[in-house]
Image (tube, rainbow, N blue to C red; front, side):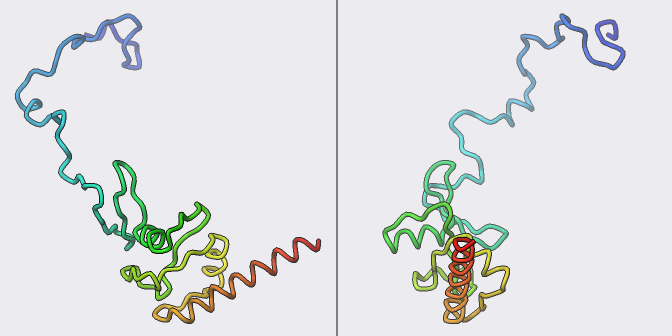
Length: 149
């Protein structure tokens, strides 16, 4: 058995494996093999809405294509497609409140400023809107400063 192996235990080049051409014949493996055409137990239909561990909700748009549910709701309500550089924010901080007036699309640069300066107020959408305006203002000021340099 060891005459076809190298000192490190690997097979030498040109040695044919003992199971070449053989099929898995024993009963236990046939019973548990995945059969063609069957769907996995956790398969979700198109249009399924699923909540993940992180608290965000996703919707299945097509096979192997999922989208954040708040983004989907915002795009349907406003009849616009969001850019990749944009994100949808919950104004009241509740990730389960998908009311269109609670969702706001902002750029990721604005989101970075909002998170850095802690400008979101949980439970108050009016204060959050003010925080977003402050972030937009700070972004404009920084762009003006770069233009003057």
